[in-house]
Length: 282
Image 1 (tube, one colour):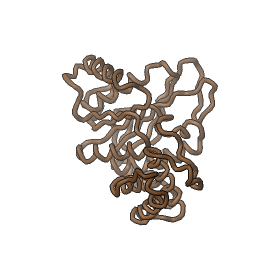
Image 2 (cartoon, helix red, strand yellow; image 1 turned 120 degrees about the vertical axis):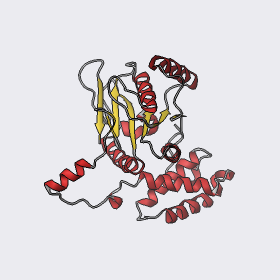
Image 3 (cartoon, one colour; image 1 turned 90 degrees about the vertical axis):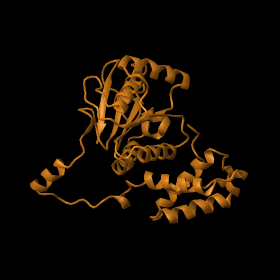
Image 4 (cartoon, helix red, strand yellow; image 1 turned 120 degrees about the horizontal axis):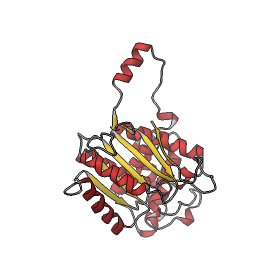
């Protein structure tokens, strides 16, 4: 993942691409806190900032790229207090109706539709092979370790593995599962530069497979956003933001989190040297 963007108040340190995109993305997030509520207004602010500093040091972004940044900011901040739907109390009959129409499970008993989930464990436990198997099972619509899986469009976002090793892993697990080839509903994204790139790929899947739910597996959480593993408050806010995204696109997200040996970070270490936790945050 690219280095953190410079302070919005330090334009002289504006980096070259691709960090420039992250800089403009963070600037857009700042503008959203100033009551910028529409994409058009936000795009105007981002475009003005881009022009102010010479188009990212003489490597200008296109209008389409600037629009993509604005869309990414809107998606990321959709769960902010200003955008949350009004909640009201329910009668018991209304609650029953809500439960009846609630999404089902993408993977029975493990991953609900439209959910944000985290799988936590020590390094070396085999989380990556396990979740690549999960990805293939979901893409093929076959059971995962005895749990029924709905056929889904799957995006595996990889910050941890090399492409060659991942290719071998797909071949090995595909053969183990008896798949003649990797399903065409499976996609692999290596080392994206920002969360907005992940969002864009998810939108492509939604356009390509409008009838299927989506499963996004992110390996690992620290690659997607390092602040999520170090600060409880930031992790909670990010998960809330992503929940709005999953609701909109009928997607489920599963983060892999490697716990720290000293027990520090946003998520606790449980007892035992080899602890494996599946923690669903609906």
